[in-house]
Every structure is written in C-alpha cells, then in structure tokens.
Length: 188
Image (cartoon, rainbow, N blue to C red; front, side, top):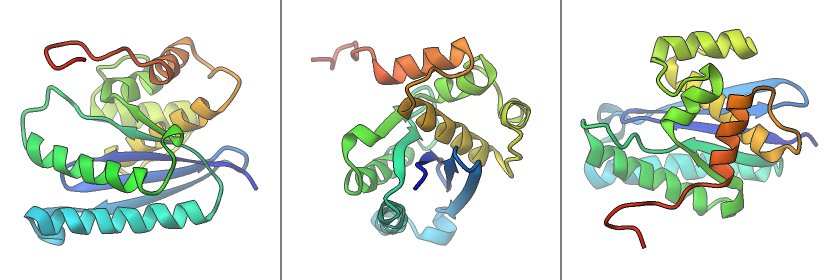
C-alpha cells in the first residue's frame, strides 16, 4: 500500500490538513472551522478541537499508510492572540503525540514552509498560493491549504532517501532533521 504524508496548518480559527500520496499523486484536503463561533470558547473550545483532531488522526492511523507528518510551528514574532494560538497548538500537538510515535512528527517553522516552495522565507500569502500552483500544479482553495500542502510535500521528502529537487528545499529538510539547540535564558 502506498505511503501517505500529512501536512497540517493550524491558525486561530481554522485548521487545514492535506494528505498527499506521491505514488498516486492523490491529494485530499480536510478543513476544520475552529472559530469561537463554531467551537465555543475557553476550555470547551480546546476540548472540542482536541476531540475533532484526535478522531481525524486516529482514522488516518487506521489506514496504516502514514509515513511522516509535518506541521507548522509557532510564528514567534506574532503579537495577536498568541496565548490562544499557543493553547490551540498545544492541543493539536497533544492529539498528534497521542496518535503517532514521535519519529513521525516534524515541526516546521513558518519561514521554512515559505522557503521550501518559494526559495525565500519571507513570501506573503498570495505569493505562496501562486508558488504552490507553479511548482506542483496544485490549486489550493485557500492559504491554509497551500501551506498544508507544502507541509505534506516536506513530510514526503523527509521520509525519502533521495534529496529534493532544489538546493533550498534540501536546506529546509536538513534544518528539520538536525535542529539547532535553543539559545537564550531558558536554554538548558
């Protein structure tokens, strides 16, 4: 059975997950609306997000074909709703580690997602949509899906023995496989 790869892009109110199967070029997009209007607020919202993602991940795991998962890490420079984003990101990570072994999970910095498809870590959302289409002919319906698709392609390349087609893509893969130690006051 061909291996599949998941790419996950979570924002404050939405989550896009792309399942990509290179052997068949099959791509599926799942989008979840986790806005407070749809998912409540506070702990009830976190419980809802966790339950929905855990159920989705469990269903994917039952297929027995997932080779790697790449999800977007935090944008540390972001100022708005950072506490809520951190809580939502933590709930998603909890659902991931409750479902799969850690060696399948790969966190990817937002700048690395952009660099992987455009060659620059500073591309805006519209440039990302266009770059995903130009590079892979994948017509993403929105920015979150474009990022999730890129993450699924990163996951596939992490799992392969051959290097990706472009040098800057290999740089991103190398950074994910060999992260630099955290620096600063709280570093051990």
